[in-house]
Image (tube, rainbow, N blue to C red):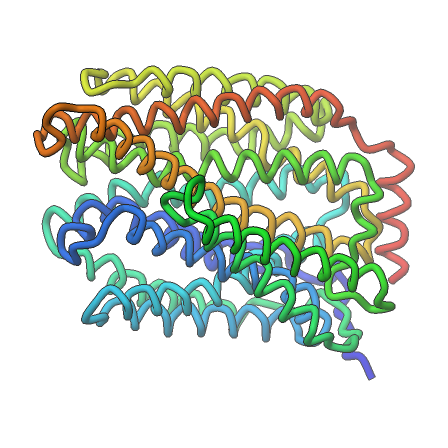
Length: 484
């Protein structure tokens, strides 16, 4: 017997939304908090950029693997149970990272943290979609985007200050009391808004998706993926598992992920757009701090301050673009945003060792301003086309694609940068000279941003085909949701 769902109209949306946003802020703050510490961690542990990037890539890989399972878990457990489990995992992982004696334990702690984040992200989106009707979702999703993007605002500067004055372990110590507060707040205010149908659990699908995504991302993480057969082999094996996963989902009566959502053209177009943008965004936010600290020779705190204005503007614009989306539709906000992203990447591709701080600041502001115009409006467009029973699957797919694409983007672009840098050093007369090492990193970064620029141009063209959701579809979805 399913537990009786409390009527949405009787639920106080404010406290519910606040509980979810506190958890989201913690999770996304932590995802961005450690990137600024990468150069110092590389020196402390004696590892390369290809190794240290696994603190981000591994984090996103675990999230990407868990998100499809979350669509199933939300039909077995209440909103409250899911949230408290997610924050419990996150707390355990944070404590493990804080006391880690070496890189391996630190990576293990990040994996546990990612388990909590993987449960939380789709839960938050599905709950917001259940609480708000389609005509108000743009603003609600914009508010969620605001909170999520405040993390990159606070993260770099806060982590830089902590690293320069205390120790990187304090990045985890200071998160613990905030997580505890989130748990206590949720115990008081979080209610259940989902129906428990308890479908059959298909373990084979979970195994297929886990192996498939894991092999693909690890294959891309090979620094010389273009020349080593191992990289190709892993990508091919992972792709094969994912093909079988898709085939199985199409045959099951109760699939782990209902792929019929891709019959909606807008949903499919947005899925492609999300993949490309997340690859670019996560790779950029990982590589820029390394460039600023190792090439421009700025401190961790100065790096955070340099990247803060773009993140602040992004956070401010999220609710604004959400309201613009509600009023004018997706194309009005997505196309200008994609154009800004493409221009910023073109400017980044021209950076060298003599680039002024002001240029980096302007390029970063333009990039994050463009992101605020694209990500949430695009996802809301795709989800608004889905009937209520497919919304959890749609959010699971989008969130899976975000994390997997982010992990692939970091692994792929770090590999390209490292490969291009080594090729540059092989062509120099003195590859051990510090000046040549700096120039090799610049050459690697330029190659990365040129590729990212080309990808941005392609999705700019694709974005033109995103259309506004017909009013009758939105109304039908709302009526069906109310009847349930």
